[in-house]
Image (cartoon, rainbow, N blue to C red):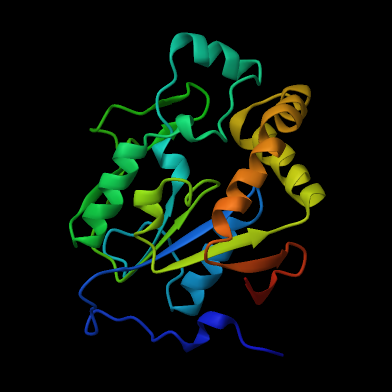
Length: 229
């Protein structure tokens, strides 16, 4: 059986630091398995826990950079009518600044986003309102539109696109949104058909400039790697 593509990467240790982090962008449709792929890469590099303050390998989700919704947008979101897969849903300026600071070896604060209130948590006295990330050797940045913004796209040393069967992605999204975000089934399906599904070609198109396609089998957790030109 072929070894995963990242097996050849050197093991990272506190005694073997690099001048700047190796930044990997991981894109893919909603519920495609981006976080799981990142966790598998982290395991191969000898680290099992994301978002550790002093970890040499760090996973960051683009979801942390959703912007606060206005009252009108919040009302639309409650009805499943707000497009969270659109570039305007993100704080691109903060996203770029955070990644640039990480590349420069600086400590950063990741905001925490409340999916029910559709706002960032503001009480910085609470440990759940933000996450402190120190300089890491490898940073995995995952999200549906991580390749959309040119200034951010150019920061990555490697770009991956996770390709997963649409039916599997939909079933995962339904379970996640009901269990973790308190949403109703009809709202989830309506939002998926009207807003989420049409957004995938944008992410795909932006990934073809330079990307590796990861076909993810959610049932066996096996990964196969192929170069897409």
